[in-house]
Figure 1 (cartoon, rainbow, N blue to C red):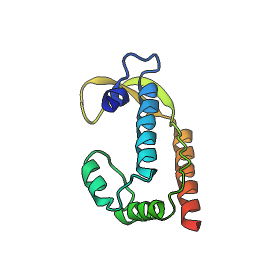
Figure 2 (cartoon, rainbow, N blue to C red):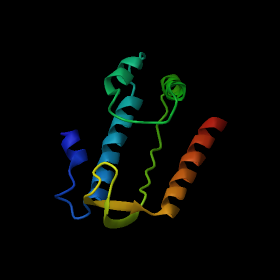
Figure 3 (cartoon, rainbow, N blue to C red):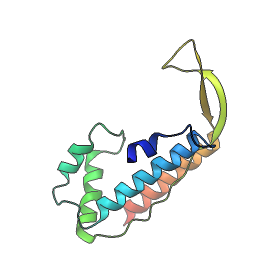
Length: 128
């Protein structure tokens, strides 16, 4: 059910934007579930279960440090989301050359704001 909810876009007026919001809700629910006291002490089984389901440039040791922090204090997480906006258009893509596809060209200012928010968040975690 969660996968269908996170992938649907055609039945929403906002299409891909609503899909992005729904995906964030699924991620938020997963994080809240993992942050609960039911999180297994051996988090590697959880990591193995989700391997290949997402991509991140966060190093494994940083992920492990977050898990250890959660296990030690069981703190509540303050989850903030931000959506990069852009201009809808038809253009060719690397994945399907020679064919115009519906894409969203990201607005550079919103990309920079997203980078700033991530840096600010990661910086505050590093200082704690």
